[in-house]
Length: 202
Image 1 (cartoon, rainbow, N blue to C red):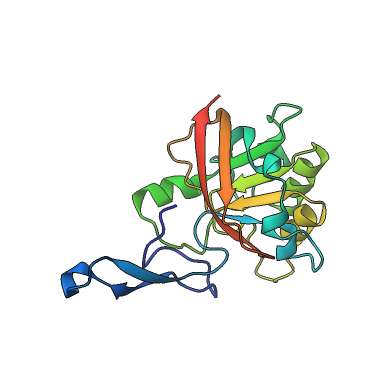
Image 2: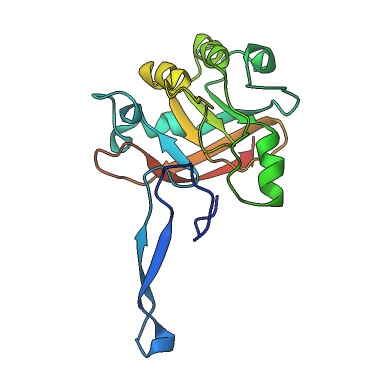
């Protein structure tokens, strides 16, 4: 997801800002800005530290878990949270799963936050964990929609060391096999890491 002023952010998270410090059009010899952003801005990685007090922070993650073959799975036909039924077609042995929902088509029209986003259900999280998945990505700013604020999906996945990649734009990525490259910012003891994530056909 591009990072820009006015970009979508999860309610309660800091909005992105870029304030000019030096500007050529003001007579400065170069352009320079100060950036303000949350650790979960745009496309970003949730490490265990996000919900587990002594969990691994983003700078101590195994990059091998974030990079390599992955499966983009379509759950665009789901009516409600993405559950076990929508994930049954994932090939056995898949270590990285990116879930493409109706969110991607909406974001392709306009990058804005919408509260009725598609998300993963607790049953879907259990299904992925049982399959031995190491990384779960989704095309929403949060992998779950939880009005009660108990966060069962985050707690289940991160509590078992399964990394989460949120804020993906998957409209141009049909379901299938890809190679994922994902490098979060190396934020010391970070509870999240904005990342550049790209897919190339496998």
